[in-house]
Image 1 (spheres, rainbow, N blue to C red):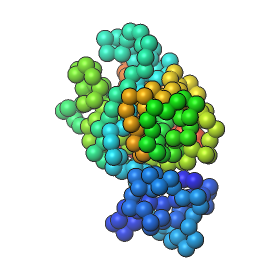
Image 2 (cartoon, rainbow, N blue to C red; image 1 turned 30 degrees about the vertical axis):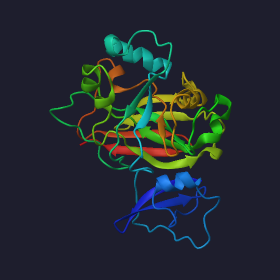
Image 3 (cartoon, rainbow, N blue to C red; image 1 turned 180 degrees about the horizontal axis):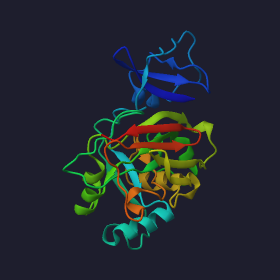
Length: 280
């Protein structure tokens, strides 16, 4: 099942599509967070209305209940390029995963703008990532049980201001400016994929392929991420985990090539879809 948040007649609504069928509105849920806590729906309810042709697809979770949890340097090739850009900020040995969080006041969906913050940000970058959506409260989960706690998967663009990220010696501010968490186009339920999912993942800027990898290249896998985080804190239903980005980001190019106003960033993960956003 694919779950969406749409804007129809000025109102945000949850919606679902089974396979490649029509998109139906799920009136019983106030928002996606409520749908996730309920475990979704086994099938499209009889009599559910179809979404109108003018419905706009938003981020599947426009307002996450908590900060998005993120993995840093979780693909080997990305570790190399990040260290080359700034050894002080990204270099050194990493015997344990790098965790950080990302403040999201509002997550924009496909087609919405990424703000460039002229005068504040001089090194705007993209990071296409597989997002894992937790389906039920997780505490002290063993790696072998992690699959049972996953509601589904989405695409997250972990937009980053590299000058702020490196200047402040921690990543929160440089990752958390308003508009820095495009997500979508939908959540695909976990039962649609083998576990762990091995999905082609790519990012294009103005049609040029920049990132091209597979989610089976994660250094710390999804099961281990959930087990490690839940050992010390409760992952509430609806928690979103961004699992890290492959190589090919702007700071990794020679010379670095950052986003500018007018660029279009397209994040793709096979089986989930495409998330495209212009920079303004």
